[in-house]
Image 1 (cartoon, one colour):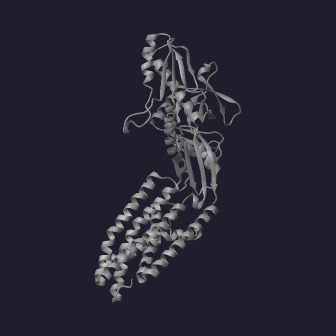
Image 2 (image 1 turned 180 degrees about the vertical axis):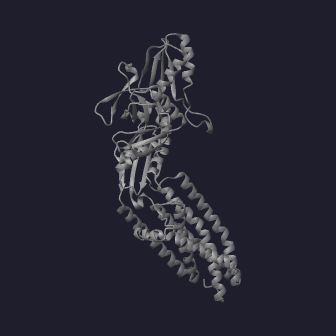
Image 3 (image 1 turned 135 degrees about the horizontal axis):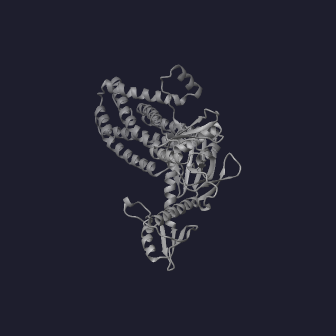
Length: 530
């Protein structure tokens, strides 16, 4: 109990000093941190990352446009049916008709229907995760009439499954886009079946965020339709830099999915802002083939069903790289490059709610949290001093180090401190001294039973340790469940609680024991002061 090696004492003191140094930059003003960084550039100056509720920022709630999801499903279904009919060389009467939730076509010959129906039914997918135990309802409903009319309809389950997948894909795309803005610790999460919550701390320009988030960024390269082309294969699209519409072929020659990089730059001839892009191998080959076969023809660059540029192909472009120009400003070129690098959204997103949390509100939250923490700490410190005397001093010193360790861990892990996180820290203050109370009461009981001072101290720490570990493990499990199943503020609370539980073992047991051992070695008391 009383034999503490010098290296153990030095290690605990060293850990405490390191924790204080890690936390110190967060206590300094931004001007002071900049001044220190200018004179000591090698010195780390990481600070605690504050959440949206503490430093302000932008809050946007997005909703998947189910109409656009359904339209994409129907368009893909029409293309799949056309491909099957072409492969099987089955003639149809009157073409493929598009309905609100599916397609229909007429195959007069029964033998031809027998050839295409099995392959059309193969387009059906089962909802749910096959790896987790089978599928659910079918995504398509195929009906055949005696007169040869075949109707293929997207079911409600198919729409719901597509929306779910669109939300999952959109979250990843939005995360890449927000990360490219250079913000810290954005919160992007699913809310309900078809909504996505985006919170970006520190970003006070919601319009920029809305522009980045709301753009689908579906890039396509198509040929401009020639005079006399089949009207069924032509689509009239708006132009961003010219009045009127431009006839463009429906067939997409190269998809924007094949882009591997997009960077803003300037045209060497005109000095106008442009976006330089590069394809992967597959996209580069397609782009080379298309430009080789269509030299002299205009090539439309389509972004979200709008023609942003329609340059004429002067020479084959076989290097897998190109340039997008469209009378951009520097900011527009930069934003377009971010969107293209992050990838296209699988569906249109509608803005349901938007809020800007001002830094003043965040400052008020910090002050309120500080007041709560100060009052709670003062009450705990006062109680320990009154109840346990010198042992209460040791517990309070350990409590101070405990708080320093929590904030140091937040800095080193890059975790976000939120207002619920402050509540979690206040809670761990009580939990930390609760461990000391268990130890001290056990020591008091052992002393009342007639044990010597050394024996009572040793028995108090050893016998209370198991109880402390059990209680803290159960609390840690609860914190882990809150973190993995919760979201937003709940996870912030769970992080602070979990860190507080881990540091409690070090401070309330190891550090308190060391201080009592050092005190006894030099004081040599005749009785325990508790």
